[in-house]
Length: 118
Image (cartoon, rainbow, N blue to C red; front, side, top):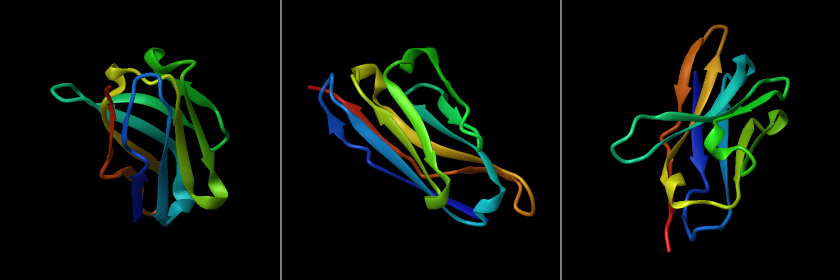
């Protein structure tokens, strides 16, 4: 099994910055792709960014140039650095891992709240 726990969510003013972390534990050797998703009130969950085991990254257009996804495989930790935050970035942010092998499947963290407001 794989367990994911996010942290770092907070209330921040527009234009501010925040870094989210996601720590994976358990059988982490099967993790290749990891992603950040977000879900705003009344909206569907959307993919924000993802990163492969090789370090290749992808971003949704609305966060390109403002968000940076990274991963420290040795620490089993993924990060999402967010700058120039906008009210539209307000959402619960979820960590996701695509796991192969014995415990293959999609794993999710419980989420962390990011609120951008003055």
